[in-house]
Structure formats: C-alpha cells, structure tokens
Image (cartoon, rainbow, N blue to C red; front, side, top):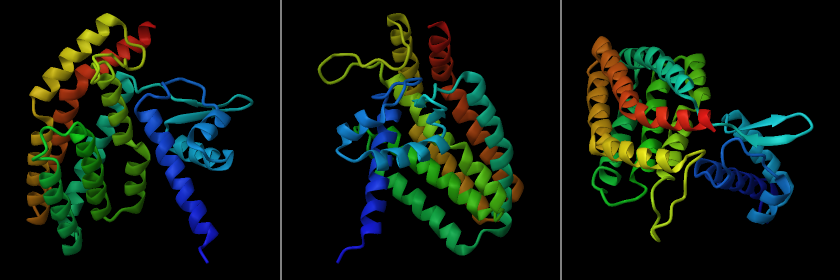
Length: 265
C-alpha cells in the first residue's frame, strides 16, 4: 500500500513548482491578485495544496498575503532593491568564500567540482538551448549555496538562503525576455512595458547576451573553486566579490529599464 503522506507531499511539491513557474514566467503578472479557486481548477488539484504552495511562495517573497484580501504576486525588484541584495551578497559571499577556503571538506570540494563539471557539459556546450540561461541561473544558485554551506556557519547560510536572490534574478530576466517575439512573431510583453520600453529591452538583452554571461560565469566559478581548493582565502574572497559585482553590473541596464517602466505606469 502506498504511503498517503508521501503522495500528498509529492502533490504539494508539484503544485508549488507549477505556481512558482507561473509567477516566474509572468503568466501570473507581478502585483496581481491570486485566485485560489482559479489556480485549483487550472492545475486540477484541490485548494489545499494551492494554499500550501502559496504559503511557501510567500517565504520566497514571490507572493504576499494581505488580511481579508488573500494573496497577490509581489512587484518585480526595483533597481534599489536589486542593488541592496547585490551588496549583501558581496559582503556575505566574500566571507563565505574565504571561510570555505579554510574549512571546506574534501567532500564539499568534490561536490563543487562535480557541479561545475556538469554545468560545463550541460550549459557550456548548449548554445542553441532556449533554456540555457535559466539552467545557468539554477547552476549558479546551487554553486553559491554549496560555498555558503562549506563556510560552516549555519546562521550565515540561512541568511543567504532567505534572500532568494536567484529566484528574483530569474524573474527579472524572464520579464525582459517577455518583450521578445515568440515563435509565431507575437510579443508576450513583460510586466508594465510600453512599446518603446519593449524595443529598449530587446537592445539591452542583445547587449547582455553579447557579453557572454554564461561563459563568463563558468570561468569565474572555475577560478573560485581553484582558489578555495588551494586554501587561498583572500584570493577566493576577492574573486567572489568581483564575480558578483561584475555580473550585477552587466545585468543592471535590464533592471533599470524594468524598474523605470514599473515606476512610470
């Protein structure tokens, strides 16, 4: 006989993933009220796993619950909020890289190298994969989480996880991607974009991809892992801080345009 608790857990996880993807892909737009019954019907599940999923998404800061009104999706990060998170990461992850260099076990080092090797195989050689950038963000999230765990400080690790930076980064990217034509030539605009902003977003996305963010990220991760495994604490810290700052600076024109579009509507 199957375990009913296991079945419910699997259903809860699947429902969470489905609703999260709807939010990330802007099928449920930012700052939009979420109707539990509508989602329940759409996903073919009862309202209970939908409510459980929304509670988890609230902890991810993707939805917010208002008394007597229910859940709504949160707005996209503003430029100021984005840079607040970036500055937090620079401070915290410079330290975690340094500490990991001093205390990481051989098992953690092996995990980091395996994660990086897999990413190079799956992402590095997949130039035509439309999901390539999303796979990079997922790899990036796992990679940085491993280093935070390797630092050995539970409170710091929990603080890092609670930022959910990569979820919000991906949400911003997919909002910008929403300005691009689909396979039929139609536009599925990101949140709050005008025709002019749509054209501008295409230009900054072209510039962003021209800078080879995937190749650059994998190269940066390789240098960081090498420094950590060699016990070069200060070098690992500097590499990590530069890696985060440069990545954010490349992405900043996209964040600025989206933030400006939301502010002007």
